[in-house]
Amino acid sequence: MKKKLITTLLGASLLLAACGGEKAADKSATEAETIKIGALGPLTGGVAIYGISATNGLKLAVDEINANGGILGKQIELNLLDEKGDSTEAVNAYNKLVDWGMVALIGDVTSKPSVAVAEVAAQDGIPMITPTGTQLNITEAGSNVFRVCFTDPYQGEVLAKFTKDKVAVKTVAIMSNNSSDYSDGVANAFAKEAEAQGIEIVAREGYSDGDKDFKAQLTKIAQKNPDVLFIPDYYEQDGLIAIQAREVGIKSVIVGSDGWDGVVKTVDPSSYAAIEDVFFANHYSTKDSNEKVQNFIKNYKEKYNDEPSAFSALSYDAAYILKAAIEKAGSTDKEAIVKAIKEIEFDGITGHLTFDEKNNPIKSITIIKIVNGDYTFDSVVSK
Image (cartoon, rainbow, N blue to C red):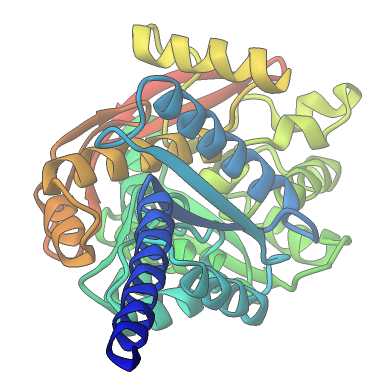
């Protein structure tokens, strides 16, 4: 009797264990049915316009990928967190995504939070692609950190050569944001290359985040009458500086960095003359006749009722680069994905791309010229 009872209890225990195992296996299988991709961006705060534009491009790409069968037959599960443009918030959000189980990160958007997150991601070995972080040292954090956009020094150098060749200048003045690593980084590279090209820097003035009145600095520049005024900053400041530059009598050709993309939205049409014929670096042009580019623009407009910025295009490309890498790797193993990204050759909305030894893209720069409040295509330039 005891033997029979023991056998019965043992059988029941094995059955329960088997049921529990099946449930655990079912749960594991369910979790594995999606590919978890984390994303960061400033969706609120002072630079939210960049984060929203960038993450809209990312979401469009993810929707397309999922509608076309996903990656390796699995749907992407995107977890997008708001870091408010703050480095500490960005690291905290990154840690939440790690706990959630992301296999790769697309982000961050602006440079300072991207640097902070890259330093942590490098320790974890998680594949990280910043679509838009241009600060040079982002990818220096680790071999698993990549970027889709060109770097600050790269665009500074190319813009100096463009200024020499296209505008045929002899003298340049520089207005840069002393509070911004981005602005200073581009300005420093531009100044160094401009001097190498035989261009004289006749004035260099600075300002800080939040400044609204630039007339004291611009009046000093006006006295030097430079051929070109170089303004490397984000468009909220760029528009204000350009308007005030014209008000104090500066007639110089204005050249700017990729942060100018979006400036037309911040300038009243009555002031369009202030930004007329401004040249600035960008990552693509909406006037590009390439079918892939035009389809992207069409789909973006249909989804968001807005025209995609360069931030949108770069983030869109980042999603497809990650897709191609995971497919090339044949798995979501982080080391395999990193290796696949390094070896990738990619044609996207922002052009043909391969990665150099520091995980920075080898690509051309599109020069945009503002005409009658519109962004017109000028040329494509490279080093």
